[in-house]
Length: 417
Image (cartoon, rainbow, N blue to C red; front, side, top):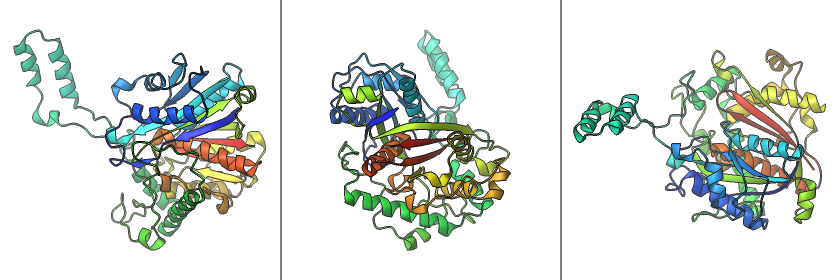
């Protein structure tokens, strides 16, 4: 299936430019930007699919509600998907498969995250009391139920991002990963520095000019640190393991707000609508991994996804022109690559052998998540759009995508031109 368009709003660190906005507002800005850019006003598309990792209860049909607020034909159907940080890329697989099967001719894959507007949970005792109070007919009965919870039950429960089966946040798991696979602080800081440097250069070259739609007073990703250096990164204190940790705010992604969208279509639809084919999605693979007993492996499921995908296409890691690997944490990227490239480590994962080598000069050449930041569900669309543009500008070639996700999942994809 063909990638014929892309669009996103600038990504913003939590509680900054988009502090008062919700998922629907951010996604609406992104979709309307895509619609305007590719003259889709009033068009009936096959489907729009995407989602947000964290939604309010009122957002159960987020994508459809948003689509009806855009300039698309309101009869365009829509579907909510969610697979943690794989959401955006899995939405593209969903739409792409429908196009490949001939069920639809065009569609949009999208993702959004409004972490600044994250919902709070309530204590179970309070929730039950509120439900009971709602059923009471008398004022006295309602008051009796509302007075039953303890004072502490009225305190909202904030989002912690913990893995339910381990009680650890991603950073806690990745600290274990870094120690287990011997990923040094220096390696992590170097990857983070290169991510910011590459992204700053891409901005200076105008690479993002046609990709990013200014929104809500922001025209650039505000996590980019042009003035960062290896010296500054080395001075940051550990963020998760305060005593012996190597993960810091500099080599880990922050909570982020943002949205992205990718326009997919058949070749016939693209031609009929005067849109060039930027690249093709040719293969994708999703995998899971056990991480409760092996806590070091939470974000390493792409190890298996890449192995299965490359076997199916008869390729090695070195057979690609560009690599876009999601930088949730520098340590996670480095550990994944280390396993892919090392026979002994690969065999410990049950692989036949190492998958090949990655030329580091071809990795995240326009910056990665450590620089742009990471609105969970929006990262997949950002990466697909970036890689499609790189291949289109080159005129030919192959690109490799890898994204890790919570609950021990991961997805890989191949784009070709």
